[in-house]
Image (cartoon, rainbow, N blue to C red; front, side):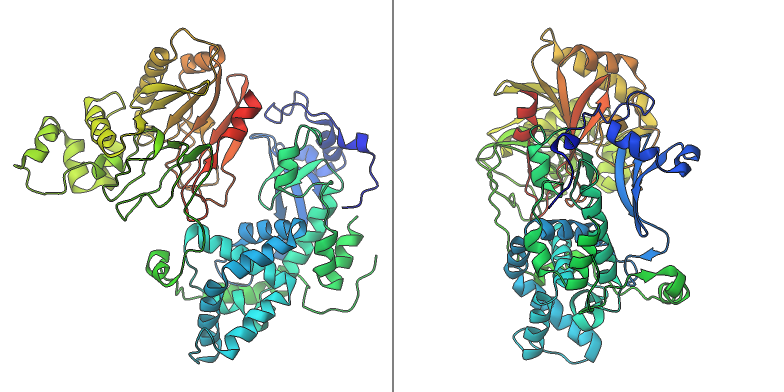
Length: 562
């Protein structure tokens, strides 16, 4: 990316983004916020940068930045189209590595051809073979239209991370139908905006997250993740349609004749029509689990992370669906099928699904296999666990109950090289890992749960206040140390830290981060964040298993601390 800015302009020093706005808002943002008069009457979402269709806002409560489209712009005419973040991520990667996007689609050619056969049937009523001329022609059309290529790559990311797609396939994969959706126009304007934004502020943009850079040297890892002022996008520009290329160049030059329809879809022009479409829409989606058997997984199951964090695997085939022979941190809900693995090593904390998965397979309660569980037969939560686990989660005892020690013993037999941390600790390569048993977030019994957390941490932290420590649990300790966004239906504003002594412990000891699972945050979301708690900067990691996300490399965050 060519820039007219001075190098010293890139080195705008910033205070910690987690500090309140009233104390040292980063200069680069403060100057921008002052440019927009509307910010004086907006206490939370401050405009930082905007054009006709998009804006970057800074949230003064959670100290985050986000790009959003403005009111008149429609992302997609397809009802309930959930791929926006995936497509935006693919758009950024196309700017940075267009050849990789092409290879990603080629890797998934059999999947794309299956979608195209279904798309053609939706439009024409004709059933065609995946090797037919019609399918080959439609596949080639994708490769000849970069804006559609970006969309297909994004939808393949969605396919890999959340399961097969089923609704409105024609508009998603056929060029002739896709041009009616308005997504190409949205993408064109989105590319214009992010390039202009990255050329105006020291930011990293990855299609979902926006982060402020400190300096080119300090933030090399961030620079490699997304679009910045340092990015070379010449290769991608040479491939994009001329009017899109011109628009991007003008964002830093006049548009040429149109090759594809890149006019954005505006509510002011099509609002009533879109409303009728959504009102009369009949959902015909198929659950991904039902469709998954028709698709081939093209990703390697081998994971080579040195310290691999993953949770919520929910393995259903009696074995782990990935391979990693280094150090693993399994943050609960690993198995739904009595999985055993004698080779995987690392640490493992107990989640909710382990509590059912370790029970005997026989329903004959007189069988000796049930002997170790008999002490718990009269507990209401245990009875419910046997009858309907979904109703039992919220009744479970806090994590210092003897039941969990029996669960630990059973799991240890299945995973002999794993260290089962049922409120225990382990030191690995100079880092202390504390594993707390928090199968679920007991919001209605928050006081009891936080007392358990406090007493366990007091015991496990001991006298050594200097050793770097990471706390691992299945459910997050509390909202401040959760990757669950406030916009999620699962977010509970009451699940905050109300025990001041916990905060004091975080101040006293060298606690550097927290790891959790539980909330099934999509793998497409950022799997870690930096947060402010107890006056210090901590990392939070939540890495949910999917076919392309078999874990998160924790080593990169640990090296920052070291």
